[in-house]
Length: 140
Image (cartoon, rainbow, N blue to C red; front, side, top):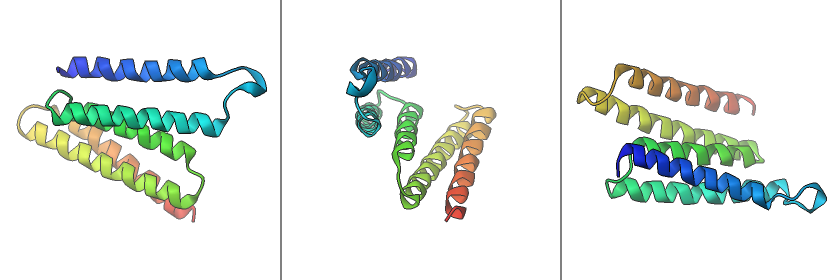
């Protein structure tokens, strides 16, 4: 599968998941609770990560698509976190993910398959993850 097809697949899954969630919402008190929606979002994103990982392992999906799905899942988990310890653990996972992306993009650039701007963007993403982790740790 090409990167473009992978991106289209990822977009289609995200749109379908969002549409499903919106269709399930009922106006007023009869709708799902916030906790239920947060849980449903995490479950859908986990399925998306599993699909993206499977595609990547079979050579049909890009590392960038997998990392984007993992990043979105971590953001959803962060949104649902209820304790400082949970938030710190998620921020650490985000940092590990950002480091993995930076290393992957750097390797591509070294082989002539990536642009220097991509390396800089990945570095900024890693720095942002480090900053957010430190902020969470300093709140305690």
